[in-house]
Image (cartoon, rainbow over all chains, first blue to last red; front, side, top):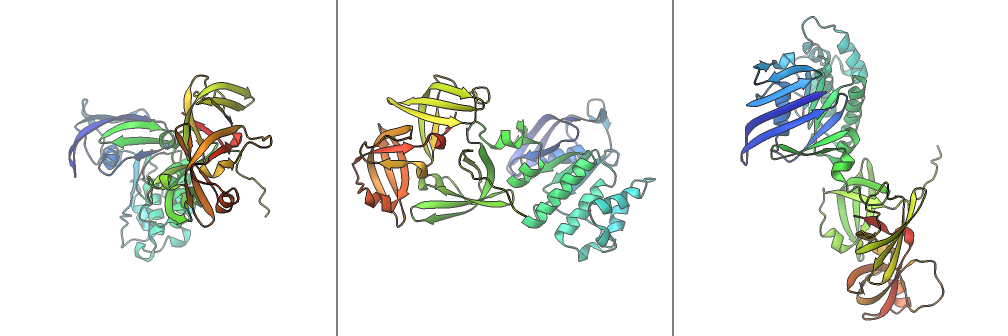
Length: 292
Length: 132
């Protein structure tokens, strides 16, 4: 379990902002920090990692105190068991994949973990190559493996997949889920991508202007659960097209593209990229066996 | 999506299904949902809730003819007809409430529907969603 209380005045592009967050995250959960740019998401991750000092605060991870400003406790970044992956891979260009991972080892740490991660994240064929010869998705896999070398208690992912195309992103999401479960990590993700949030998160913390305004499951936070339709999904509008007197809205739900007929009065409130709830009654869909 | 506000007058539960009866301007509406008062707290007699149904699920009838299985029958006036090539949208007024129906242009022509005309709008019980 992670429990933290962090207070700091931050300089945002819109002016000064007071960050005041208190929260606890259960061990083994994957939690998404959700909020607009400048809401304080990355600052929270940096404070947990020990890269940014709050004016006042406490951080307690699995009963050990990492930070207590009143008692003068403040573990150094390397003493905190965190793994950090961000959009920029920051790999050493002069080292091979394997050397990049080995460089992350603690003194006296068993090298076996590098071999294990190379297998789990399927880097065997890439291990002797230099980063410059690899694709963005491959580099991000290495960054993920590297973040796990020191066997962190908290894995922090700051929009790690936002630079990747959709197919690559889906694959990386699978690796993230796999290692999250295998190593029983507590993972904190920063993401704006709705299908990604739904696929990965157990819980969401909504951050607005430096405070956590809501905490709940993706369903709790993003959908109106009180609608009776049992066929409910959330997705993102990709396309709106007028056909005759109706509109056809293409919505990406997970990896599936669905189409929904809508009236002009509804279309007026929608724009491309918007997150929407698609609901129908359980009485309508047809269900049939897929023959292989 | 058509939205009407109506008051729940009864909730008949059987297993996980509820048949909800609602009252709006002297007309009875019915909806069947896979919810019970235990799973959806808004399913309570006396509550006023949202009754939701898609424009494309609104059936149009002219005159009162043969008995029909549809349980939601609204006496409406056509306030506008927007004719497309294949589909047309009828704007309807039901005792002051606006609803819309999308049917084929062929049906509009076949029924010879006109602005100002009295018609009945009908919706199947299983096409109506409820929300608080």
